[in-house]
Image (cartoon, rainbow over all chains, first blue to last red):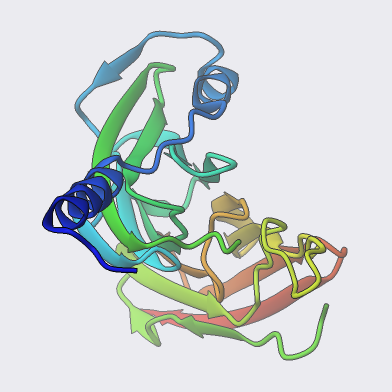
Length: 138
Length: 109
């Protein structure tokens, strides 16, 4: 089988297009957030989510959440088959409402952190992470 | 699954009263997500640590709910206030009902 110049170009364009379309799974992110907040409004600011812009390996992506004055922080990976990542509940002896861990990401997606403040309000932060190799197996 | 699970914890040996210290913990555990398939196409059942707690002299420092999206060998870093000398108690709760515990002492001057 021989490739003509036209075939080669078409093939190259197809590959480039497939690579450009990001991996997206619309799972029940909203449901998880609603279960955490009880339908309350979510503000911005007062919470920091630190995640790498580009993660080479989706199996261990270091993240850090920091929300001074929070009682608990919910972390969601919006593009994972199951979006929930974890919930940090801070007790009376926690020195700062800050925690870091390593998470799995199935592909390029937004990581979302929602914090419940001591006064009952909610704030959120979002950070996009580009993942080179996904971390959910197949 | 209970073989080869070893918790590793780093807590400063001493601190001043009321100081905020950083605690790092890591426990070796495969954290099988329940999403993967083996060679025959069967789903490997989920087996993860679903909860981690840290207490100091009986008072709670942090209580974390872990989901399958936490990486193999879950690593956690957090801050704690130490009002007096005492003992940190750490507990990891496995899906199969096992609880792995460890303690660390700290001297407060």
